[in-house]
Length: 284
Image (tube, rainbow, N blue to C red; front, side, top):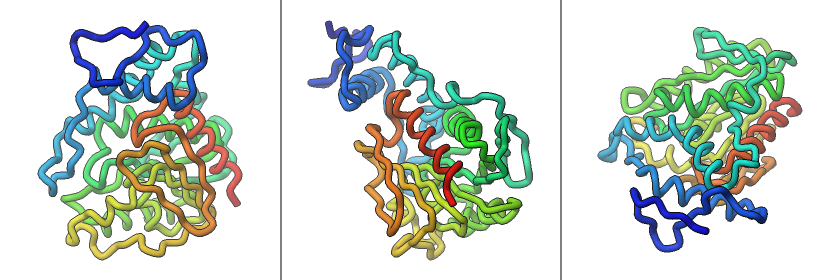
């Protein structure tokens, strides 16, 4: 039986089922249930950047709370008998974290001697606040622990105070400081930034290449992703990405997930991080 929350009117077709279902829903149907609940209960903030009239801190706060909200919503609408742990909860293990000159270093409990650099999302202007600690870095920790890879998460400089050239310089320095071959992993605009760097392998999670082209020229500093080629590249694509257009690069591996740009079921999120870890562990 569908149940409406009197605090938030539903749009046509926007309903959820408290307690889940007697039958197993498809991944698409589960995502429908999850996004309907989240949309009804949590107002989407203004994600526009400062140079387009936005820049509200509410965007970072919204993303910071998403993992907990997804878990809570999934328990309500998909049923309590399912594992609703997000990757940062499910796979932490014994990972240790310390600060370095280039960023937070995530050291797995069983290091393999592999290294990676990770880059958060945020449209080039945000992502270094609450969202970094509550949304992104738990996934970094999970990928490090699952793969045995030591990952340096770079809190790179952001626009409009800094240009893309500043960002590239900061992250490339972190890559060059590692003692061996390095993979770079970025999410959304962080994936676009990753594609501008010189590394031995790349993971582009829901890459938003258009975000680079949309930057004011004085911030973009002449950088472009036209014709980019990356060795040993995995591109992760969301089937319902409302932010980023699909990206295809010569020779890249591809993985698809039933997800919007920011929201998936916990099970799909865990699969995405397992795939990330597998690539980090096995690329050559």
